[in-house]
Image 1 (cartoon, rainbow, N blue to C red):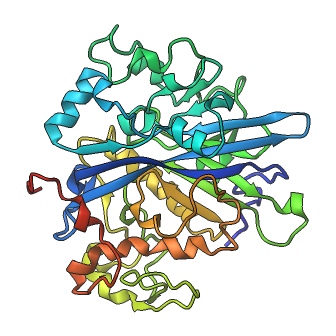
Image 2: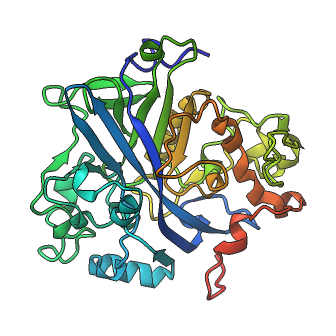
Length: 394
């Protein structure tokens, strides 16, 4: 396996950013899995998902630290979203809930909303765009290709728009263009087209289309061998947004086959001593397509994807980076990481030393306990708390 800072993968750089993952206090229950991926597997028909955002801090020796947010979760007053979105939520009977806005979570961690230089929105869906109006007009809104053409003007000027005019009015609206080399520093980032946001190799915005118009992800360099003069490879946090909705769309893969022995055992709580139990990988063959240990359990599908085939190609690109032990991939709704990672105001920068890549890699398999005839001992399966109050079936 080649090092990620080789010329064929990610350009080397001594520059880094700090990244914190924000548990936005947003949550969606009663989400049918079949609306996002398939095939349907009995015992894993529902999803209850958290919603994550990220604080990215870019230090500079000659200027104040720049603070960015990647996504904003669900606004507390979601019934004030565009009417077409509110009607859709009510029609599909999802159960959204948000206790605090991201601006309030930041304030609790002693980061003032006025210090945020830009909000980078992975895509325009209501559980990601949040409420940008809570941030001052000096906070820019960064969006992916096609945003203006397809979504602007927002509601109420366009009564059918899924976004609000207040999301962008009065602030700089920056639309990325992966073809415009005159404005952006466009580079190859592994298998992705990327934009070197700060032009110093610390943060790349990635073209990861398929789920929604202009969907983007972000890759942040959080440690650098060049900077530290150390021997470990550079480490990266990949903020995937909704490039995938469930880790079973990403794994297994030709780059990360299902192992013969899975450590830690996904059906048991993590050991505080680090001495984790194991379980055999072959018990999961019944949920693998054709019992292929190199094939992801699910593929993206359903009406919530703009282009499912393109979404699958973006996932295939992510699978290449998923093979790297120095890349921590976090999707916006990955419930399986809740008992592993530390959230804001803590930083993710030391994830490699804490073994979070290996701890999170196969944790999602706990959700298939019913399918493979195993008991979860003190571990909550997603389906246990996901079913909506109505008890409706997929």
